[in-house]
Image (cartoon, rainbow, N blue to C red; front, side, top):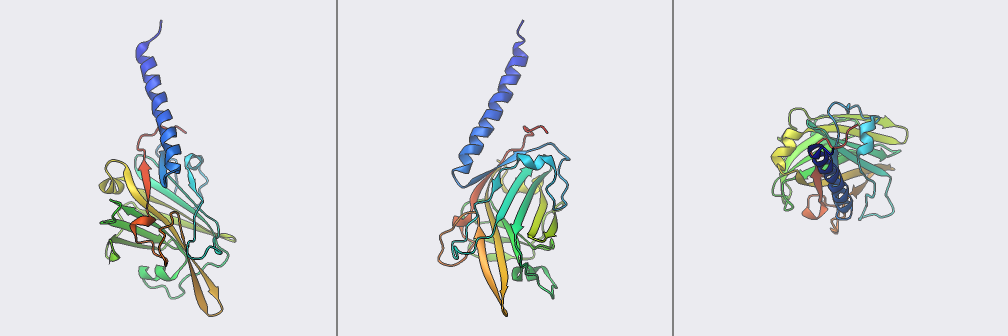
Length: 243
């Protein structure tokens, strides 16, 4: 005899998974990133991305350099979440890593190779939060408001952490951001996201700057601090993907 309660539960779960797959696929076509959920305790922030849970993450690999199309070294970005943290990972190709020799404070990160993440409450960037991370794991964090009103006194939330690895071919950056903080920005699980990379290289006595971005803001000169540089991040908080 068919147990209708069990049948209904199974169908509900099947439809939920189907909805996630369809939504994820549609997000890829609209400058959106769908963050898939995994069970707690599967990710260790060590800069390596060796855990099987990372296989659930969609990747962003189609970065662009609108202001110098001849310079586009490989950059990959991944995110997943559990019920505690949002996890992110960058894998960067870079054979000429630029670091500040006389590093003294977090603003020195602006002189270095780095990856960047922006989280905004709205498309208009009336309040957004920025994390710029160099290959050594040093972080420039700040709160901002359009246009270019920066509050560098802002510190990352408790529980934020990063780890990096420098390789012969480049570097990797892995980190976690508490979901409690993310929820203050986007209680409904939808947030505006910027994913970027500052690629510096030495040329004789000069530093050449290139700016890579997930989404082309179509500005005449490099500028990430504009609404057109943001995509959409959709956070699924239920651990549908059981590993």
